[in-house]
Length: 414
Image (cartoon, rainbow, N blue to C red):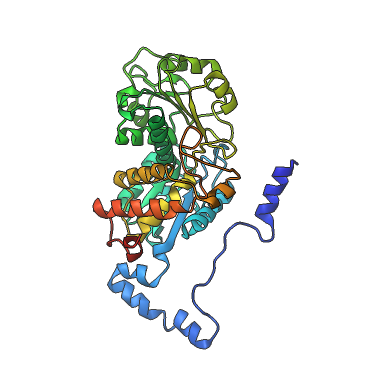
């Protein structure tokens, strides 16, 4: 057993199994305490909530509670290992919600026979929570699941593998293009991968200004084009009317490569085909589409990002999802819409342009960080992310009409 494997297993097993627990927020020491906490005192908030369901936010933990829900069909890069095997990942997500945004979170792993079974299960328990974070659900089922749950639930539903990845990717990519003096509207983008994250990334980039016809998406069979007869409805959105068929064909003159596929699929020699000052996001984790050292050997004019923490420019969903939910729950949003996602993109990207506090440098184990080639997105441990991103999301929710209440006072004071 490797040292790291042993360390990881020990971390999850000791001193108690798992990574999360329940804590009390009210005293429960006396007979009076128990009478208030349960019978007969609990009847009073029950009556209030029955009269007005919004009172659940006043008298229960609903407004600070997120469900992290999976069926285990796409666990990390490990594949379909089932719901129970996904539990450590879902607990990890709950840990991140608490650590970065102060949100309580419960993991729920669902066994089901059909997609409809899963949708019904989640919809039927959704009112318990302030928000639903879907996780590690394979494509294309994840698209239908999220779409139907958004329709049926009165709380925000967010598939982080899609939209969290997309938001952080868009923030970093916009900054990289700015550094290279390129405009999103004008660039040609190659997307290696056609799953949930890839499609969400490209759709959000289009929302931010990219041109759909200048995006070339590839799956295992090559370029997605209009003459293929094996495409689902989601891939069809990115079918180009083109004679290009291979990765090399579409890389010719391309400005951007976004990889959300698998390890070592971008040969170093293929980088030579790209336009001057290319941007390469190789986000397959833990092994990127091309190792940064090989990419830099092949091109000295590129900006490189990966999903790894041991290289500059880590594309990490934790920059986004805790704060998206924090802002959404704080204004009782009923959904997380495009306006909120774009607001998060710009809040993240603008923070990278500001001076970096000493505490972030220390946590990053570096002497300096300055906006540029090796620092295009903030570090995950930057404490400013909570206020900036959550407020941007909350404001966007209010302005776009999906918030249940106005901005809380603490947001107004920021």
